[in-house]
Image 1: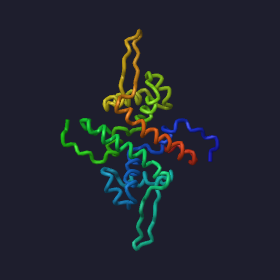
Image 2: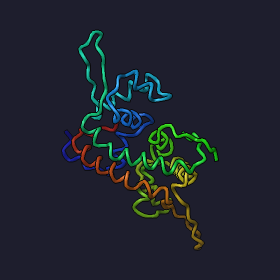
Image 3: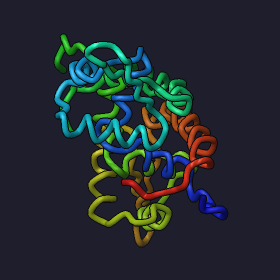
Image 4: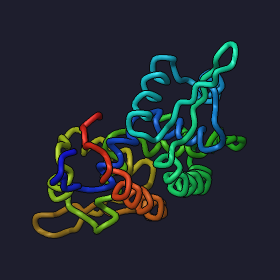
Length: 112
Length: 112
């Protein structure tokens, strides 16, 4: 590991991990409960298979999400928050509260 | 305003406002203090004028940032967090703490 890695700005660095359109929404859905791929896709309106597959793989590499393969017949795969992912839940809850409070006032428009 | 606007998922909706590479870093810098354009740009390593100008305008439209023109000679412009922007500070602080705790363990790599 790069020993003398001096973190420039923790928020900016955190956003390199959390950035992108789908990573936080995926973490947020998995914060509710572990989910299979198809159920996760169903709950993320507008996400493509390519984006979901890529985002999950990146979140696994960052150790925020775990992938569990159940040896059932047929085998099934479940995704769940790893420890580092669970540590984000308090921040996500505050973003949720902010969203409820602030967005209510806006003439809602889909800017992104 | 659209009366019966039912918010689907506050986190996903909040991310439509906070999403994108630069909005949260800009909010985070302004959370420290009001800043002039050039100083803000200096503190955001890698941002272009186009991205900073566009992101500031969007954040103003969402009423998260205010633009103050001082009638000095020459006139100068300052940006600061508006009320709705200040309400994000607790969530940003938690993201910062998460970043400090979690990122220290990672072999840092610039994935975004």
